[in-house]
Image 1 (cartoon, rainbow over the protein chains, first blue to last red):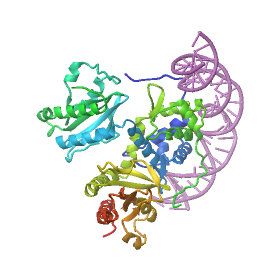
Image 2: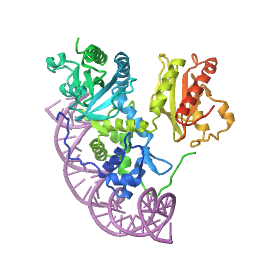
Image 3: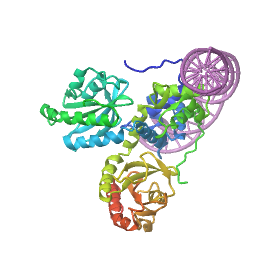
Image 4: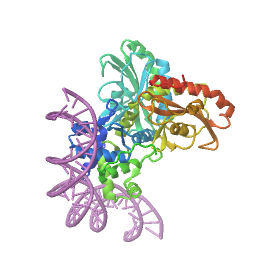
Length: 239
Length: 239
DNA sequence: CCGAAGTGTTCCACTCGGCGAAATGATGTT
DNA sequence: AACATCATTTCGCCGAGTGGAACACTTCGG
């Protein structure tokens, strides 16, 4: 655990936790929920769940549909947008990713470490019909895949890049069927002056197209893109 | 007010409201806040504000930075993504917008009605240096601008399009310096089979480039794009 | 070097707001 | 009509949440 943990004696507020748990039920595949379902999934009695929903609705975090189902509200979207604009990564990363998709014609993703998982922050799909299914906002395990290993091998807050040079020379890291037996990938780190490692840029695709020889061909492109990005964010690595 | 309001006797939970108010302090321009600032802005005593923050942090809604500031957390991002994927509009709307940017070389936005405001859900910028500044997630007033009037003139839930035909024939609606004296725009509605009016597609730009004659030229393109989009969402209008 | 004025955090007694079980409506299904 | 299953309301009890004050720790500037 390289987590920054601050131990406090201040206890959390139960009612708030409950409300947030209700909120967290929602998902890409769970757009609407009825009160009864919410009650069941959270284990709260219905009256409590209803109070939470009323509170959440009052602040526009959820909305009530015509048929008394509950869904996420617009305020959630506003906050979600505010989250990414923090690091104004998107304006830099997104165009670089789009260029990479054009070059490689495979999916390009940008992952960030979130605790002991990693989350897909940005994603640009290739136009192939056959492609892996990861969407922005999804989290996957940290210990598998090229991007996962990139995120674990570099120290979190390290603008000076004290990472072993041997590792640097091996970039980009390659995954042959690690996370999914049918998927290969290669990934390189992106650094910023302020935060050190900010994420991993990765190309991934099915074994059949993203062969080991093709990966060799893509390596310099990924590495150069990641290096250029880092340079624009004020950090330099690899020349 | 065409709002769907459900009156209830169930009262909201104060603690939850307070926590959500803390959350809502954050913004594109307000990325980090200290406990003292949060206490001041919300009017809560510090101990209360701290409890809220601890609770929010426990569920990953906020994160604590190294210097004891608070910022939005990754869970917010996940939920924000889940919000839009609900109506899987994005996969349809985004490409159509990109094409429109190529055709018109002006900014294209997609607005949705949120209560008595309208929110920019998607946005594709032109590559001009001079352009209006609206970002995804921003809300603006409903009663001004071409998109605003589109959203008000069409009944919210109306798959059958009982809107006065006269209005339909006037599409797309045009705004000459309504919302901002220097900005013109034109907008058309997008319907879906399930929800009726889902949003307004709009092109906007400075008076100097988006002249009234250019607007005339763009009208059929916007209208056609909106109609095609609606068709793909299962609703037909304008042929 | 010592206050003064900021931070963030902890402690605690009081009170009132939230809680859950059960009752009541409201719809739909057999 | 009888039965499910839903959302919503009511209400008495009690403990969780509250706010104020005290505490510890920096960072000022005189």
